[in-house]
Image: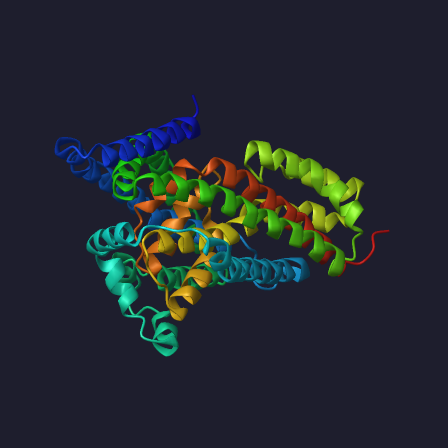
Length: 414
């Protein structure tokens, strides 16, 4: 049985057990979640401890792998610009449309208040960091950390990511020998972090059960309904953005919709079933060549790069999931906090690990950035299979659309 299946079974079992406990009225049964919660908290803490080394090392590897500024060339520079524009559009789409999609979702106010009170007690320094956001000016100042180590300790992920991004750019400007040494160090930390993540995920069924049972005990049947609503709405959000990528390929890439659809369909089928944009790369390359006839530099350089680091679907999912959690816990996010969610999402998508549920793991720093409880990650991880299918389909569709757009600026092949 796959890990995804075990986690899903644990989630369903936890929700069912929680609803049964909530309905029983038995004092003895109602005490069970009290003993389960520490187990869930331990698992979440174990997951959180992998985030900083994983995100920092991934960003350093991604940026440090680029040639120096003179060697990036026209494709590399345009690709990076297009990545950020598309990710910003995806995050903005989620933050604007997400509240409208979640508006019909109803959570009992008393239950939401209980969850919020518990979350405020458990969020610790992350909540305190979020309360420091007094306005846009202060938020802008906080982007540059006076002490990156302190930022990591406080859970201030956006300043830490900004520092790491600048450090990675600086790596491209130093001597080759020193750069190679730093790259080997980052690659070693990243590899070890991935092993650690694997160990933590082995315990995911237990952690998800220990998180979902107390949640369902507090919310009753509403918890199960909220989870189903999230699955359907999150999948629909990515499906809508996937459709927008067809519009982008037609309007900006000047590709015929029918031709683009034929080119992208095989890769979409692979991505939907395998939940991996890297596995879908051969189908992407074939469609780009046989159907769209894209230039060789786009096929040989851009598409492999996009498959490895470009996660447009995650840029839709992360803000929407944050909005869902805020709705679940009855937390109102301020304007600066929403901006923080968007920017943190854009930067963290480049470090999404290529494993099932990778986007959920990277969601932790986004939640920390605005002081929301990270315990909800366990619940979302358990139901991520279906949204992940749609999310990965968005990844490969955006890869093909971006390649089509960039191809317009490439000289014709002989």
